Image (cartoon, rainbow over all chains, first blue to last red; front, side, top):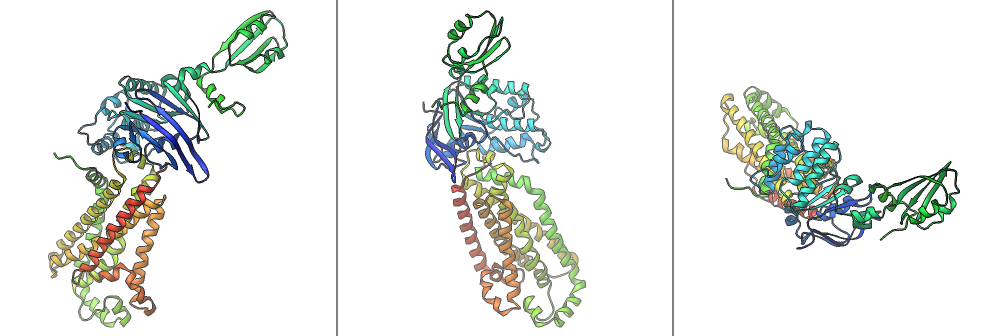
Length: 300
Length: 266
């Protein structure tokens, strides 16, 4: 089975400004793949290159085994795409818009649209000009999903959605994965990436900074360890331990960040009277910020 | 029911979205034409006096008029050589400009291109929509004028007016095609409108001035209006019509090529 997405040296420059630089990426069929990075990192550029909306400066991309440029019509037949920003024809209702898109896809009906609209609590018969931002986003989601595409490419899909609808939407993505479909999810909402993605790529300044399973990325997170002693202690020995950073002390408390195992910290703490010990595992956001911290070396 | 091709679906969708505005255009132009026809019996004496006493340059400007002015000459002066060729191209100029640059600005192009459509089909769909829209507006214009003909008690063969309006169809379409090309090349719909409209107005000004100002006369060949002559009152301008249709095809093909090479931004 061909890769859902395969890019080789994919590069896009806007004049002298880089959009994305020599991106090598493989997304396997049936996974939910998170593509994360801050604004301007190159996420949307990458998606637009995959969908042949932008032409690469160099390199190539294949979607489901088809060349993203040469076979772009066939590619888009199998892809559901939600743009990060999109306009709607405000004179039409959601149903009319979906009927138009269904006709362009050669479909005789609205496919999954009625079911998706019901699950997302979306009225398809309201003129789109009267819809709230969240409901407009739901129209975009239904348009991306209604033809049951083999590959879903979603650019910031939960923008404007309330938490309950976000939950429903993430459940829909899990179901798509369970059906063997692939999801390429660009986001800067890391909590949703953490909840739904099997693998995550982090982009920084147009380059791939990390590509790992969500699990292993989270395992690499630096824990925040807080030690409470019976009396004030000198924190400097903790700072000299391997894998320890950001040490600070206040009264009887010493707090530090820890990348590796906790054994050395516990042994050093045991030389004093330890009252309490707390280990907090950071969210993916903090892992992500770690990759963006200029003091940190690039992992890839 | 037979399934439409993607281009057919695009055309049908655009016509559904725009039918009200097309109706307004047709009723406005047809209503104006009908008004001119209705006014002709009471205006003809005044018009003949006006033409008889007009300076030669004015007579030349109005088409070297001699003798009593007929209803088709009157319609030609007011409608066929002024209002329709200046106003109606704007209908399709706006449509052409909205197709690529305008859709990009409204952020609707991404969603359209997420469907299994080739880019040339988007251009072909837009060109076909413009052609059908213009034909509809001109047909409605003809119909309303012809309702007024027996009511006004004037004599005017239906075929002549139909042929004259039909000749204006490729003329107007050409400017829509130009707007489509500029919309494919540029990123601002307003710029595509401005350039296309400027070309139209320049042609109109050249044709108007060339009648009266000798040094401008060599430039007349650059104006489509010159090649069309007075389609509502003369012979059907076959050469101009066929040449313009060829020009439309070339410009639309250039728009397809430009859009195929173009990046689409949000």
